[in-house]
Image (cartoon, rainbow, N blue to C red; front, side):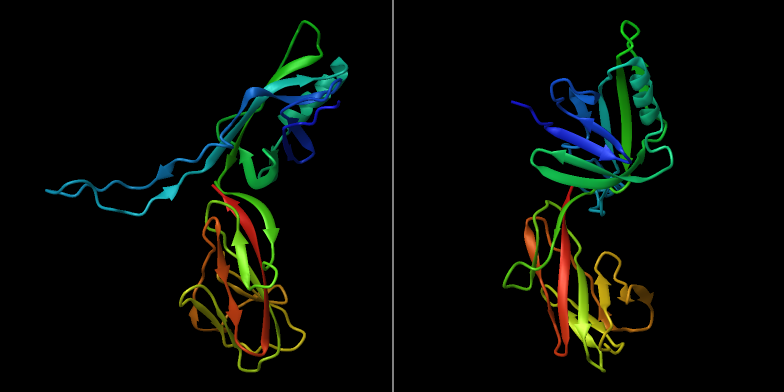
Length: 258
């Protein structure tokens, strides 16, 4: 029976696996060679003491960046092939930020990473046979969030479900026709009103991550009404939405993890 990798990390044509099929070669992650993916990330923020009182002021805190380390052994069928693998590793993420995909524990997650500052990929050839080498590479995810599956409305509802563990911002697409504009109604009392006319054949997009209104893909200014709230679906929950008459709304959301 051929075994399948239990962990696959891919980016820019380079692949690291957590378990090799028999007779395989490439970058094999050691059993303890993955760090920073399954862990949480540390918090950052100021600590302001309360003078003549217990404790500190409750100031907002934020999450730090995520560092993921991969290490293990590279196997090759010839010294020349091993040298080729070494060139892949030393050039890995050398040009800047790239999407990195993790196929791990039955789900696929991705994020945007660079080389961790002050680090360089390590590739040390085993001098005994020239067919193996030890490697290590460290990745920095400036945005510590990892993203999973993207989906639209749950069938028969106007709900976008976030199956992650961190708030996820939806993107709405509005079509139809309404000369007086329209209003998108979100959770609770949140609304996003658009004063710009909605013309037949146009596509309006509202991305709750940045709050901008886009018409046929281009950001427009001056077409937003008195209120332009933004919102997110909490981890493990959903965000309802509705739109005023004359307009039709569809939406997408991406599972978000921390």
